[in-house]
Length: 288
Image (cartoon, rainbow, N blue to C red; front, side, top):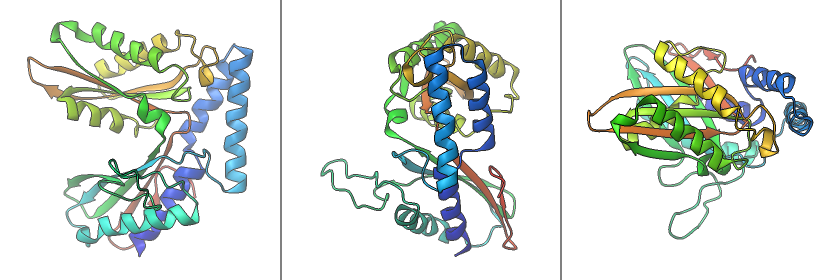
């Protein structure tokens, strides 16, 4: 019950209360935005956030698809029971928060009505030598998911080619992913690895710099280029199209140069908790 209750709390936090680093980035975007229409959109977004917290309701009607990112210590007891707890929490959250049921069968379009199904919620496992469990919940709506892109580039394209592809992806997406967005860029590995890395990059706090100097420079360059497009908040024009760019990378085959771009709308709904073996729970993303 401890894991199930904690995950239910995480789902509620993610759906209703944005992390402080995201809210701070949106407030900063409001101060920086020079276009009156774009500024009005950011004002409405900030009011939307305030009302969601005050009324304890989801910040967006599209509560997205549920993804769980787990970092499990090998010494944490009950690893075999975790997935069942995640599914039970998702079903309970759908009714109690409530979450919009967004899981449909690919072939029949049948909706089970509880946000579960084949490979949903998505669960990503990571193991380490320890005795605690980190759980991160990520909720992403259809507008963000539909804008994602992948390109298997020629290695000769280099980082300038990466910038061109990311910028082209943002321009083609326009206002569909509800900017100002957070852009996750996955580099290297293979097609599946790059896509996974791009989505994992969306989990990174917005107020922390990339520890890799080359990746950090790429993030800064892309941030400036994307905000020069003029797409602006909600695609209605302005200087702030992205709140942040986050890069994650892997080594690659010499003949391959995979680049993936994942979009996260302004409602960056993520929440993280750490469960210790003695039953203590620490919420890492929110002050509660």
